[in-house]
Image 1 (cartoon, rainbow, N blue to C red):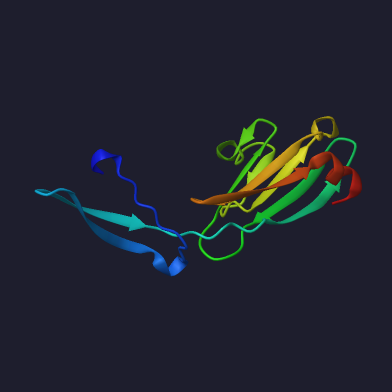
Image 2: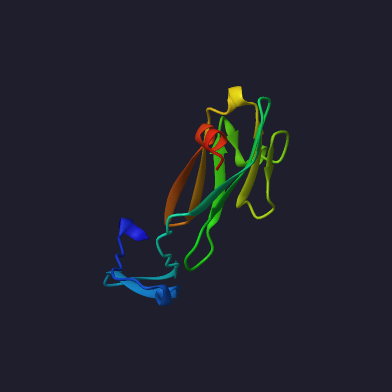
Length: 141
């Protein structure tokens, strides 16, 4: 907008999403029309999580981690852990489900001292859940 004018809107609700127009009178002879595309998002609730130990031997710890968003509207689920980002989780000792909510991990016990992070987010908010693999592998889930 001209002259870095600010428009503030308070007490928004999800039903307020839409396109809004404004006619701004800057000088007696200068009028500017602006359109604003407003999207209203709710806060993201804490993720629903679950871990399941599939097998634990002296050589391997195989487990499944689940992380799901809830509430209204779409949320993204991303994973990070042990220098592994979501884009690298589909190969080797990590298998990511197509919807991104379930991660299967197979690690030797010497590498199980790792924390995996699940983040659920929308454009306005994010929440994080942590999975301590060593605790899961030793306790049985």
